[in-house]
Picture (cartoon, one colour):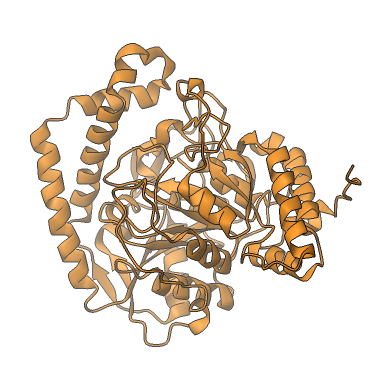
Length: 477
């Protein structure tokens, strides 16, 4: 019988990055089992106030950690993420659990028989899955408020939203329950929680990372990616997750293009501009202060207009509503009472969208992409806000942007939707600026790159981290 494993100081390990944990496990400074015991202790202590986790798979995680420790003792090579705990939004398949996708209906499904592709990729690199995370129902959400599982709360202020739909993902990372977690981003669901919770987040190029074993929302727009407390951790996990996914017909075949070794190269030679027009209106003062602070640190002075961004957002709404409604049409017909009423109403409205509108939106999508690619002939990276405000209060229905009262739920994605609409890679970079309401709360800036150039966006994010402009503020829990 194995002897009990002492639990290290969970507070001390809680601040460690994935890269630091992997290095410590590889060197023998700490065992993978000790890391997992500390992680589980941290989750047990902190999550009751945050409500980020819907499932904790403790015994599986312990068994995985023991295998890693045995491999190290035998002198076998360890993966680059050996011993690193991670969690995933509960739309990723986890073997042995039903895939909830934030819904009441889905939890009645049969348990998954295998892990999602990206879960398998991370575990092949040595990472250890510890559980599934709270999310907005069927990913149709920007607030992190789930009527079935309760709201995931912002670790920096428990009265505020974590953002959605990957709200549990952002909250779990910001609360230092795990150093790394996976979310999905259809219209901004990685970048909005990153902004409200103060984490780094990577939305890769559309088609880059395999979506096999994840519950879809809008196949034409769905992306999967990591949130973390350091740029290096984003890069390490992104590298580990690359690979061909036979279960995702929408994946674009690409060679392995590692980025972890490139992020320290700085920004020399990169042409950086600030997005104007749509991205300089309808936001609270701290939003533009954050963008301006980032631009000043990078020496970026040029401002460029992204043409038709408002139309791009409207077109994204049409495609989202129509495709999402089509996916859920049968559930809406037979179990309408089991949906979150707000989600149900949006999906029902999507059923009424004429096909001609969807066709027009898809045609415009191609045009808008072509226009954006022209901008990248003159610039390598664009800077834009991630959200129009810091984290709103839980239950808050409206906010005021440029003197206009607007609904919170749809408009937290004002600045993210035009970018995910055409699948560009983006890193959300958390910034702290002492401007506006609740100045201690974080807010993020989007670093946007051309297709397949995650390396450039990550280089800029890493430079901001080095300069101290970007940082993940500690949650006082």
